[in-house]
Length: 278
Ligand SMILES: C[S@@+](CC[C@H](N)C(=O)[O-])C[C@H]1O[C@@H](n2cnc3c(N)ncnc32)[C@H](O)[C@@H]1O
Image (cartoon, rainbow, N blue to C red; front, side, top):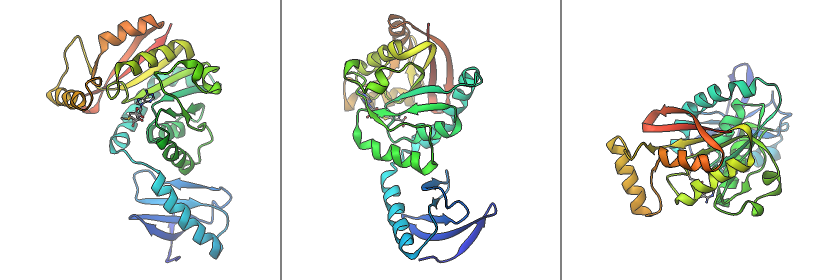
């Protein structure tokens, strides 16, 4: 099974197996860690585990297959995570420089690509991913384990439209510095948006931030044509879905003690909106 060894940044790695066009390597230099390391943007994965024995090589192949199977990859999430990270870096700079650990809740984590990426970039933020669809939890865990992250809690079930008394104890009793939500507001009924702002009003600390990402209309106007077509396709799938207007969100935010602090134009005609708890 071991076909050859190569050197990567002076770490000796051994090609273990190739699966789904992905190469899996083990690293003897990092063998004390028991997790998988995933090279972003590369068709390679580094398996970091205890010293290799012939039995263990077999296990690693199995682990590799399982990890690939569990990591769901949404191409859009891979494309937009870096531009969103650049916004987070700017708006969280002051909070992150305060020295203590910050707490972040992600609503509608989906595959886990965003939370794993941001958790790696912001080691001083402790993240709690969540989703209404438990089928994503394996993927979230796989991404977190692939990066060897220790600042991400296990994903929890949260239906953002449900009463907060039914939410996990560790979430409803925590004051968060940040609530992050991407690509849910337009791909769900408006009740999810109401639930999101309600949660932000209740769970954020004073001056805590709610950050939302996606396409938005402004003052009744949706541009460009590609966003109009996207909105039509969403409403065709479900008449309760659709791109929301920033003005409606501003009104909703005021009902929950928040206001729009900053807005960023993003690639592909999306926006990142930063809401602050007053
Ligand atoms: C398009 S995906 C976005 C996933 C991820 N945030 C991203 O940007 O890649 C929409 C997500 O919203 C979640 N969602 C839909 N309705 C929800 C609800 N009522 N409560 C929580 N999450 C919900 C779905 O399960 C799904 O993971």
